[in-house]
Image 1: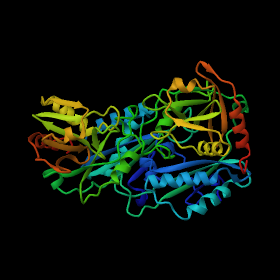
Image 2: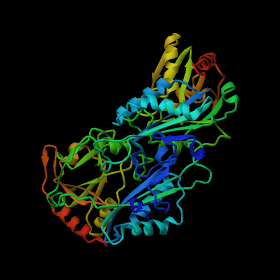
Image 3: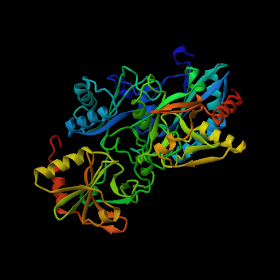
Image 4: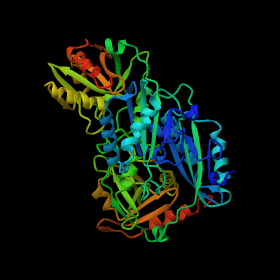
Length: 278
Length: 278
């Protein structure tokens, strides 16, 4: 295997190129997952696969039977026994007349492995600073939840802030309700109850978000999913963001408000540490 | 030049491949134009270029000085003296940390030439049937107007109808107002006044739409741009769709309503025929 290509497989082949007419590029007609691997083992693999399958269904991209085995096989081939982030992209492939899918689509899969990002330990220990992005999420119930390739909202919002002043930007919907971070989901805690914005009209149904909601159910922690204004959410005494790569980061400041790392946040962090593979 | 690659240039090179980590694929961080060439001459070239420049500005993709000359040069190299459709895609290139642009982006350009699509002559002479798509456009003022690569709305809406029953699908916004076709803009005519939906919150500012609006100004045709409900728009006596590839197609039926091809539509069709290059 050519070493320059050793960390990426396109339809199983070691190449870092795709066809320029791929519908993933032309229209963003595809989905992606970013998965944490520890010592060659994926965290929450089934959850990532399930979300991708759901995304394919929503976007009419036929799920390929071979993906059930090849995606993991190829991810592990690239990772070896190391810690890594694996990115999987699937698209509807090339062809079709304009926006319309060809009669027999030939979907594309890209599996690539990347070093774990190195974040300061203080992000999870002491918490991070967040700011509110001016760029708001598109309102689109038909695309909410899935991790599709139409990510201009996140690109534009991420350009607004720098790592030196804060570590995540919080995004609002078109009406000004709080939804999520640019690459994380957002949670609050009040009187032992876990609170998180609905993602019915925009936002991503994060794999870590879902995992925390299932943990809450197991541990009899009550959950409130709903529509919250910015002020309302900022008033909560305990806040954190999460995703499946970085785990849970408490929020210690959000503009002029400061927060303590709370007990529920710490206890969830502990449970996430025990994830199989972690 | 390898004949298999003869109709596409990527950054000036004859290849039909791009880098799999291009931000155009990862996030749809890019723009495209589809331009009609007649006998090797582009129609409305400056308007296409201006929209693409505006799009780059909105998406923080640095416009490359060389694009001012190379895009046309390469398009004409691919077309020769023929009639063709040229598609230009520009993206922010590879690199960056997650959603964030690298400090020194290296944008990508793809220029490709394709045969003119062959539509029945009756589409422009007698008009087409249109239907209303169930899939609605995302509400996002920050992305409205420009022709970016986040096109899942159009992909999903185009999958709803077949060429045998209608020739274009009309899309509504999240509140149910009429906006545009899946690949066209929409116009109505009433008492000599040209009527078209606003594209402030969603929709594309079509090059042909803009051209017709400027023609109307020249010819003292009054224009009403606004927010219209589905029923309200369907009540107009004269309707048509347009884009820079197919020109103007009158609408002859929209679900249960039927329309005659009106005088204003015919006169605009005549003016579009006279476009330089056409």
